[in-house]
Image (cartoon, rainbow, N blue to C red; front, side, top):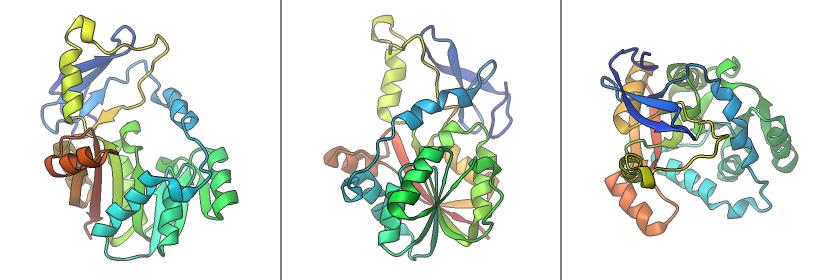
Length: 261
């Protein structure tokens, strides 16, 4: 197989997942992307489990993670304007951005989730596959795509789509797993020891097809016309979050990038 970002054939087996360790991830020696081998695997068939985990919000003000996402963005994006949230779910991020002065819209694969946002927040949501979306070109000051990029086989196309949605010098906010996070490294070591190996149900199918590190993500930005404004890792726990913000060893990353005109 070849790397899905840089097309190099210099890949080595990095780790395995699954009940019988049948799912193999390979790391590229060039751009360091960790690629799931998609042969005989239709990755979209394992995505429904992520929709099933969504729970409706009774009080948007109590969705702390979404408020923290807004606060993170507001530190680095010195404006308000038009905001698009790709994969908006039940709309909690849209809620906070609208509250603080942004003009908001969502994109969502699930009609059920879109209907919830439209009914409860009166915010426009378009139901579509983001990678096939052809509207709204060059009109947004900010695009958000959280916990989505790692599920998309074609990372370059995804970033090109975001690039096309943004105004000149527009910003994007992304969240995705950090494959070089400390706990991920520890788990990969544990998986080499049979009695410490992570256990999977027989029905398990992976949802992540591309895993990023800071190095890989910066490589992707260079290929798709962006520059990095901020990269940090984070945690829901206050002290751990402080450490991860400064040492960047957490398993969850959030970034602000800017379109290069």
